[in-house]
Amino acid sequence: MIIGGGVGAFFVLRGDDDEPVAVATTEATTEAPTTEAATEAPTTEAATEDTSEEVPPAPPAPTPPPAPSIPEATEAPTTEAAPAAPPGGADDMSMGESANGEITDAVPSVDFFFDAASGAAVEISMIALADSLDPVLRLYDPSGALVDENDDFDFSESRNSRISTTLPADGQYRIEATSFAGTTGPFEITLTFPSVLTDSDELSEAVPEISYEYDGVVGQRIRIDMVGTNEGTDPLLRLIGPDGSEVAQDDDGGEGLNARLEYTIDVPGTYTVVATAFASGYGPYEITLTEF
Image (cartoon, rainbow, N blue to C red):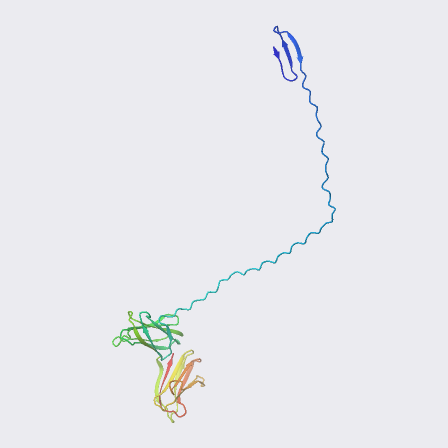
């Protein structure tokens, strides 16, 4: 029988009769001699100090100038388109004037303009110059509002149109000349301001002048016409203000030797219209004063 072990163990050997035969011991393995760690390598001093002369640093590169700024684009100013011309064009009229026009399929209306003061009385007539036209008139105030309109002012006699009204404001008025039911044809339009003074008389050496009074309102425009009714009359007009001083005078401002005076009232009060003659041009005459 064998009983054994590892390092440092012992073995017992027995024979068949269980008697011990021999005893042997095995000594533990001898430890190998230690070897001292490798000698540390000698240290090497850092790199040798540079003894050469120190070179001064290069000056810094100049800073480039800033790029010029580009101004921000601005939007081009818009130009407002001019208002379109009214159909058929337009024409300015003055008191007592007449104008001709024509209504067609391509030009269904024609506009006319005039300036007037608030309170002025006006009369506008549109006369057809062909049987094919049935005229229609409309009048608009300076704000564009309709003042009056007319078709067939006297249907029993004709289909012509007429507006008679008092103007509500100062400014420019628009007359629209058009037609009824698309009818077409030529026409004549007339603008008149009914007179607030109408008279006829005669001047002579015994009566060299005749006076009339008129109550003026500031801003009111007036026209005075003095027409000689025979060849020898040479009318002359004078307008005297409320303070007695002459504010206007006219000789031959109308047709031929006739006098016409226009004036805008700048001081309220009673004005005097003096109808007289130039030199010795006395004779019969007619005088009218109209507001417009």
